[in-house]
Amino acid sequence: MPATQTTSRAPIATIVGISAVATLFLLWLVYVHPPSQEFATRLLFLPALNALFNAMSATALVIGFSYIRKRNIAAHRASMITAFVFSSLFLVCYITNHALHGEMRFAGHGPIRTAYLALLISHILLSVIALPMVLITFFFSLTGRFPQHKKIARFTYPIWLYVSVTGVIVYAMLAAWR
Image (cartoon, rainbow, N blue to C red; front, side):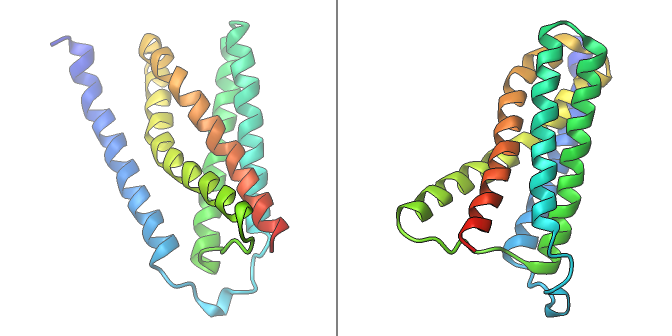
């Protein structure tokens, strides 16, 4: 077995393990952990801030993609790090919001509810897949393994972009039918 393949397995296994633990924690936080009524009226701006962070991440992703198409590696890297920072800030605010306020229920009915749930389910499932993919893609880039980075980034980019954009749409739908 080539040395680079064996040296990549442990960090990738660690990334997948951390991603699985993070996903299980988020599922527990959103669907099991009851929020405290003491904080029900505090930090009510967090869902809007989450949507902003998702929009900023999506914007940075599109900009980063345009830079790599032009072979501007430095600008691409800066854009992708920016997208990662915005996604990380989103995650911190998302955890805080759900710890304080719990799960938000969609108030729409009929076909719009079906559309919302389909969008939400695809958003959630792909976000679970995106987390380890983003981390592995960054791992390959930061360790100079550009062929592997390029290979996985082709799949990571559209999934990450979809999750960022649908996060904004989910927020907008929740706000519109509040």
